[in-house]
Length: 195
Image 1: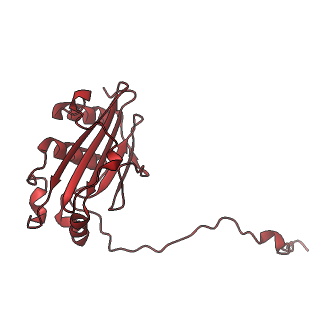
Image 2 (image 1 turned 180 degrees about the vertical axis):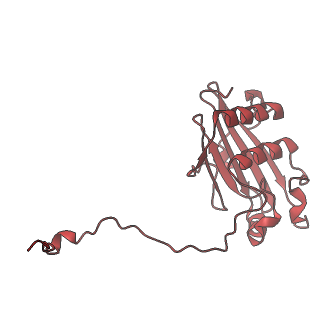
Image 3 (image 1 turned 30 degrees about the vertical axis):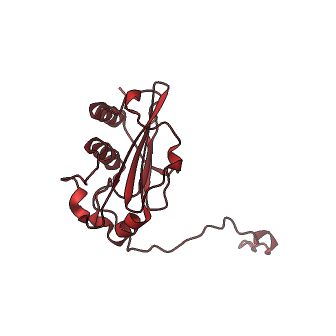
């Protein structure tokens, strides 16, 4: 059963060199390595977004609402991985201050359960000669914690994120809503058709 005050927040932050490599071909990189942020609140609302400008303290828009069964399954999965207990916390400082190295990935899980908060951080470097597709669902990048990979992938799946990123080549026009017509009060009234 999910806790009444349960919050799960995940962030993936990458260094500038790796970020550039990911932007060149995002489909070649697994979802747990691409920059992203997801927050799952106790009411089941899942806020998620992807992109290089996301930080650890960002609160993205609502992507979907999870059912009770989905929340229960996620907490159970985190229990199985050993993260759903305060003893799993390995970081006791402000995660906003974590700065990745040029080719480094930092994966952050912030959890709240039964009035207790804890943070789990995993960081690893991706060498420049690493094959992009090597960390997909079938493999693990060198130095990557397999448990953290599984947790991030579970959260990403609930946020409808996959190893195949959405096609960003489609450009939609920018549409602005300026609200009601501010000049309407200065225009003459329309004559009635009754005359």
